[in-house]
Length: 633
Image 1 (tube, one colour):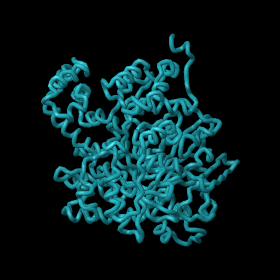
Image 2: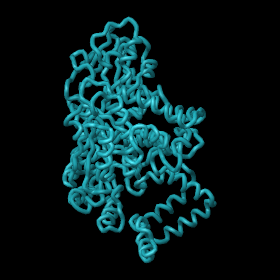
Image 3: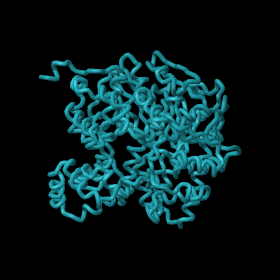
Image 4: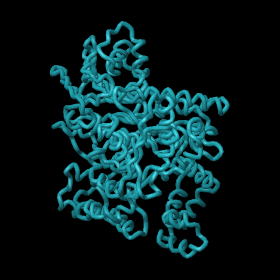
């Protein structure tokens, strides 16, 4: 099982077991702190009571070390400090003191209890589940699959969620009997067959609700200074390492802020990395180079051809291990591979959009709901029926006939599709439903066979934060779903595939807690998203270097599917294969594929969801799942 995830820790390995208790722990190590054998895992506490296997970093281990009484230190790893803190204070108090990213398993030898713990924001992954009489856990599914008792039955409900969102939200995984441990929770296991529920030691919901009740009242300049100090400390802690480190730099607000704070606290030029593309609409490399030049970093950029980027696509199922369909996974892997050539750690700017209202869709959803809510639901339903009475092609023809007076940006967005999307939005009954519709790809009920869609934080009101502001509610949903299950999953798998540790200082939990106390007027101000974060950055970088529209980190997948990737996609979407596997309605998939190839509609996002699952199935050696005769009964 440990060898299956060697890429996550190529520097060392270790095993520990207790036959009488029926437990075994294994670890793969990426050496970051204390490169000596004293950092070896599994690690046992001095008293012999606890044994730990730990993935991640606890950045404030030095400060904790100074507060743990009467301990004789063997080395200077954070793992040793964690064990000492747990022995001195107990597990839950110790975990509350940890600042960092972590997923760990702790065995209590005395009580014969196993604890699984995941960090507050879900930066590091942790899967677990029962297969027969065995309880299995690991950092990636491939570790669990290596166990002979593993049950590989696919969860069609989780597949439905993948088709809707391009990722599988926790606690679900692609396998029925395997779950993801939710962020900020502890799971206690006493026997292999015991059923326990994870309990939170930190709650994003409580933080959001408390923050909305206790907003900071300081003037804007004081709020900027408070955020500045928090971010300086968060970045400083994440620069502690015994190996070379650098940072991803896109030239946007978030990554530029991280790099600026790194350079301000470094005695040498910080190493920065960016990827460039020939396609202008996807190329942020020139902006990154300008920021790097201004800050004086040691900057490396690599221009990647379309062929080089496309060559990554067949390898994605191996790199990501669980089906995952955010196409920005491609440039994220490429920039990770570039950084790994010279560093072992890279800081990343992820989290700024979710904390400081950086996504344009927040404003869009708010505007749509405000406008819709002025009209009775019956009137909205009637308008939706009218919009749907014409096909998307018919609407496109109508708009084409008025092309001379139609702005280019409207024509390019395929207005027929937008009319049908608007019709769907008009039928929604709440602000949250509008947002859910905006961030959905497929309606899984039309696509996945026998795929009942389970509840998630996005659909279960009991899991949502009780905050009055609609934008805050959208930000909360992203914080507990999109951020851990898409953004952080993407960064973790892409970086660890090349044995690179990615650190995310904007997601220091103290920054998160402060951000939720910031009034919306300081997050969106003067028409600018992330206003407060921008003011911190502007202390180091002039606004003209970073003030531009949000580009994202995408790829021209739609064009590739009509060109160089067409044969690859055609093989995965072949009608007979789809029918044999019996996961998708073959007619629906083929219709979408033909629409995309013909240019009638751009179905790249929906098709990428299906293709990433199909490619994953093929990587697992699954080409058919039911007898041929059963398909035609």
